[in-house]
Length: 92
Image 1 (cartoon, helix red, strand yellow):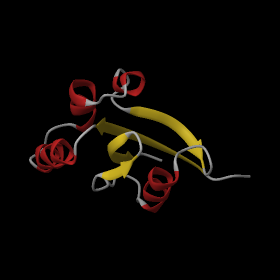
Image 2 (spheres, rainbow, N blue to C red):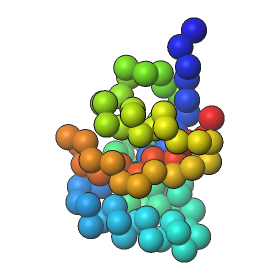
Image 3 (cartoon, rainbow, N blue to C red):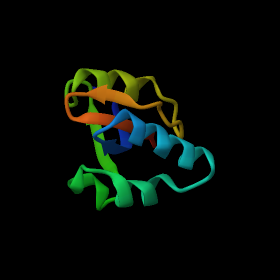
Image 4 (tube, one colour):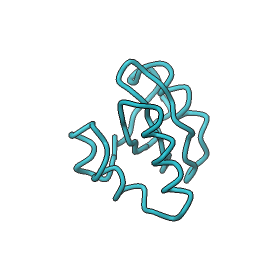
């Protein structure tokens, strides 16, 4: 059985935007609130950035590699993919 993880993300176009969001998270702002407010992934943004559960092979490689390295509750540094810059939070 494939390992499934549950993550949320915030997707933005520019690295500078992702770094500014990271600062806001470090200062205590809620990940889900920032996802709703700032993410350009409109589908997940409505759900506090939630992507639900996924297994290996379902996401683009750089995103997948970063997501599967995270511990539960951990937030990634910005990850660049062809879609932009992702900040990922792992839940399960």
